[in-house]
Structures are given as C-alpha cells and as structure tokens.
Image (cartoon, rainbow, N blue to C red):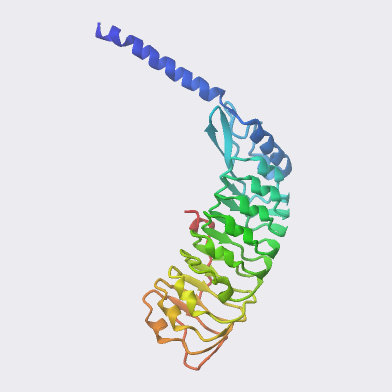
Length: 331
C-alpha cells in the first residue's frame, strides 16, 4: 500500500521532467543573433566556415554550437554571449554584424588580419566586458562610442594601426581594469581623465607617438588609485619624473624607456612600496640614483643605460623585456 500511495508523486515528477525537457528542446535561438552570426559566417571565409555547421549558431538538434560561440538561455530564447574567433587568418574589414549581438559579454577576434576602422556601432554592445582585437591591421581613430561600453573590464587594441589621439571617452568606462593601446600610431597627449578610473590596474600606451609629461598625466588629485603597471615607453614624452608619482602607491612596474625625459630621479619614487621593475633607459636623466633604490625590498630590476647619470651609478638586476599574454590579465 505504501508504494501505491507514492505513485501519484512519481507520475507528477516524470511529467514535470518531461515538461522541462520539452521547454528546453523548444527553446530557440533569438532570430536577431542567428541572422547576425550567419552574416558574419558569410564574410569570414573557409577557415571559420568549415567549423560552423548548420544554420543555428547555438546548435540545433544533434548539431553542436558553432566553434567559438557560447550561448545562454534568457527566458524563452537562447542568445549569443561570447564570440571567440582568433588566430584563423580572417581577412577583411571588422564584421559590423557583430554589433547586432546585443548580449555579448566577450568578443575576441585577436591575431587575425582585420582591416579598416573599428565601427562606431561598437557602442551598442552594452553588456560587453572583454573586447580583444589586438594583433590585427585595424586603422583610423578609435570611435568615441567606445565610451558607451559601461561594463567593459578588459580592452585590448594593441598591435594595430590606430591613429589620432587616445580618446578621453575611455575615462567613461567605470569598470575598466586593463587598457592595452601599445604598438599603434596614437599621437597627442595621454588624457589625464584616465586617472579617474577607480579600478584601472594596467595602462600600456607604449610604442606610439605620444607627447607630454608625466606631471600632466597625474595632475588630477587621487588619480590612478589602484594602478599597478604603467607602460609609457617608446614615445616622445619630455620633462622629469615628478615626486608626486610616489602617490601611486600600488605601482609595481614603471616603464619609461626610450623617451626624451630629463632631470633627476626623485628620492620619493624609491618609497613606492611594491615597485618591482623600473625602466629608465634611453632618456636624458641626470644626477645620482638615490641610495634608497638599492635598499628597496622588492625592486628586482632598474635599467638605466643611455642616460646622463653621474659615473658610478649602477643598474639593479638583469634587464629583460616584459612580455605578458592575454591570460595574465583575464582575471
């Protein structure tokens, strides 16, 4: 009799599971995303297309989701939330249809051969957290609409042919943590407004054509509160290192090599608590290196060649180029 009394509950459970399964099976990919991905598919070429089988990028029946496409369920539909198509030699302009994938949180097209500008429609991707288009051949100016990506935490634009000024609209990205702009053709000054970004840990504008001084960059009180890595190397920066730079107490890497900077090295810089790498080489610095640098508990490397320091000034450690991968920052 006990088994009979539990029978209705068992039947109800089976019915509920069947209903859930039916809902999942019937859950379709949003037409907007299907249309956008098929437009992208038509423009990308065989290296990608051979892995994109079927009409539904999120998978259909026995067909899996397209390679590099991640989907999630929102209500009665599936939407595309991540698109990763990198290192497959995509040739041609940036696929504007990507900007119709309004639920994207990650867009990774790095290490391809994309050309032309980054379209202003990129500002439509309001949920985007990671944008990686490094190692392409993109050009022209960065559209100001980039400042509309309010949830962006990681921005990789390095190793392209972007020109013009670094857009001050980047300061409108309150969640930004990693900003990579190196190896482009940016000109003008680095906007000091970037210092208002409360979460910015890594700023790399090296290997461009930027001018100005560090004093201008840090002129906003309380700027760069959590900045760890500051790469300003291989530009046309002038002036000296202001003592106020020591207010950036979280700095670990300060890379100033290959500029036109002058003056003496302030004693205060030696008291940045976690300073680990200090690159001063190939500038016009003079005077002595304060003894406190040689007693710093964390300083592993201080590279000083090709300056006008007094005789007897010595480097610390062995110089090596710091090469960091995307994986070092996707945290």
